[in-house]
Length: 110
Image (cartoon, rainbow, N blue to C red):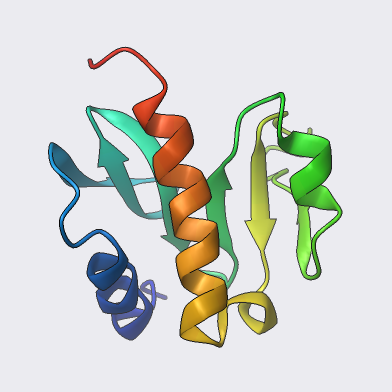
């Protein structure tokens, strides 16, 4: 099963005006990068991935519909899944994408 193209387009709209962005197929889905660093992505099995960083991890997990990203069976600290219910509204999606962009922009460019 492929990732949701409509969701990919919605995420692309959130990246409008952000420089040095790219897309890369990773994690069985599509990831959105800033400066070569992953900001967020979508998977073929439903949830959105958002890279929030270790410092913001616990705060992000306190948000509705967010949970640890554990595709390997072990949670990846600094990465969360956001279930589809948590990104249905454009404002909610934009908020998550902006978190990912802010973290990616805080890292050195690759």
